[in-house]
Amino acid sequence: MFGIPYIGSDICGFFGEPSEELCLRWQQMGAFHTFMRNHNALDPAPQDPAKWPAVAAAARKANLFRYSYLPYLFSLFFETSLYGGTVIRPVFYEYPKDTRTHDLGYEFLWGSSMLITPVLHEVGFV
Image 1 (cartoon, rainbow, N blue to C red):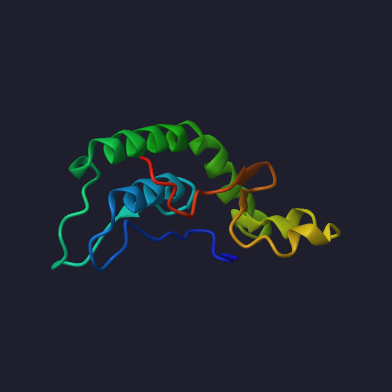
Image 2 (cartoon, one colour):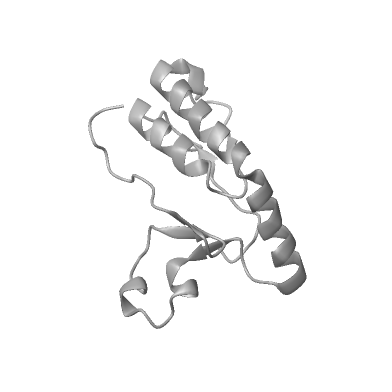
């Protein structure tokens, strides 16, 4: 799935202008990437979360959640540095005999203990 301990995406995308909901959901999901940043090209419109009050509130909540789990995240990095492996793992890494986990493409784990299931489809409210 990731295979690299320190990885992430450009929250809200790199090119173009994201919708408010897309940026909000990306802020939420990005909090669970090991490398989290809001970044875009020079020409597109700014994507500052403060552009939308709901996105700013969601980004704050996601960041505070992330900060509260930094000790766990750091311990996963330490474990990975000692023994190899990944910090972010596909579910089937932990449950290889459960064939239902083999097709899960969007859910992922932080280590072996925390399941992350991001909202990936527009739900029409923010």
